[in-house]
Image (tube, rainbow, N blue to C red; front, side, top):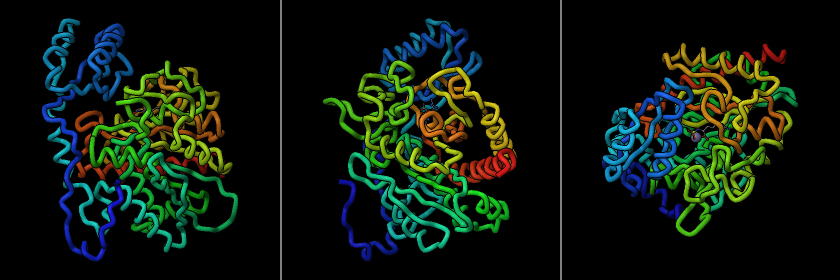
Length: 417
Ligand code: 0X9
Ligand code: ZN
């Protein structure tokens, strides 16, 4: 299995040359298509389903693009079908495998040290989290265990002054291939726990909130995307012969509905599960989200597309307090833009992105009453999509953390905390 007992002493100073994931994507391209009509959008989705393609991004309005990964055997006939709709695809990413290989040097290769600027494995992440418990502000906890038995950990960061403070919780890695979400949560943990640049805002926020972070809530999927298939999205429970995994972000027990942006089919990328909260990882996260009545805000961090969006994902009807969520989302987006110029779109899930029921953000707000619940889709808008280079780790961490601080600071003012 994934844990291989290697005597740590023999690894000191040795740089391991880790192989990439075994499944290869040579010649796979990501096509970008601009639909001209709403009918085109439906035709593109239908065509992608016919070819069983991996949709990377659905258009949210008419002038928005559709990104889809196509393998070399299908590309000619898929492009032909698209052209017969009167549309012209561009080969946005020419070779997905090349991007995967380019990102590999950014994986953590040293067995003996933890590099916050690399894409780290789940074991090293847990070891790193454990090591933070020597910091008096940090306590390390187990949220639960995954289907394959991995420990899902979270940290609580608190200045330990006062009690009953409101709390903010952020997590990453619910979708296996979204490695930048994991590295960004780790970046935020490091900043909040160690405050390396002596930032007064961090100290002020610790006076107002307790912070909770879980970098990898789908560890089986995450490890599988590192070792076998870089494009893996779901968890790793075998659901049906030949088809593994449930999309955890379609599996939450609040208006769960596979016919609304998910799927009954276990072979699909967005399989919603056999019933609401059928997956152990979902149950663990649900219990955690509803188990702490101090939670006032939740960020479920994903890639990609640059969105800071809020419920509902199951309906275009806005929540009654949507103005509050929108206001704080905008505070975050402004701070992000001021960091590296990255522009985030703020709005409701369904209106800004697409309808998808059973998401973690809807559950936190609808079932647990966490008022400020968001999905945050990090950079970029498709240049690298799900396969960012390791050079994205630092700027994504910096801009997201700037957004996070601005969000939390505005929350203090807005809610008179
Ligand atoms: O489809 C998703 O789960 C998210 N996008 S991603 O590309 N990272 O897969 C968006 C989820 C938005 N929230 C809800 N629909 N509830
Ligand atoms: Zn995602």
